[in-house]
Length: 220
Image 1 (cartoon, helix red, strand yellow):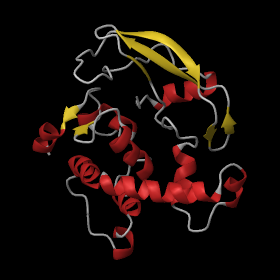
Image 2 (tube, rainbow, N blue to C red):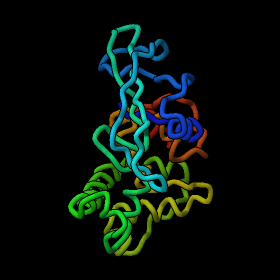
Image 3 (tube, rainbow, N blue to C red):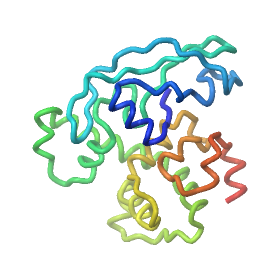
């Protein structure tokens, strides 16, 4: 289960190698289960081959597992910087996606095919999540300018960057916002509570709970 945690807690994970005890799931992973409070820690397992920009390969990260007290489903919390099978963090992939030539220093750790695959993957995901992301950003800034050049509009990630550049307080990347849309722990037709990780200035997304798209669209 991909799940967002605060930047402070995320840093603790990287420093200590384990999820802080104060961090718990906001809902059960099992479809149809309504549990939102009672989850028990259920061990952890080491995550191998995790790469982080500025540090390189990390070998001390453990993925925390939880068990739902209602339906007994067991699930893991995946860090918001990585996915189940993803080795490199967002910052690394972001640098590759927005660079025209290949980043030669990364070829020591990743194949040329992998770097090209990142570019293709993120472009497809950004295109698939375009409508949801646009709704989020327009909700936060109704005066957002959508009129970009043909060059910017031709690439969904460049276009998201164009939109984010209009938020003076925003420091997050189009890949981070795209990842929240795709892996936020909620299905794409919903607004994930973990959008706070990407766009913290909005009261709508600081409530710590998800909203159905129909509810949030009406309020926009």
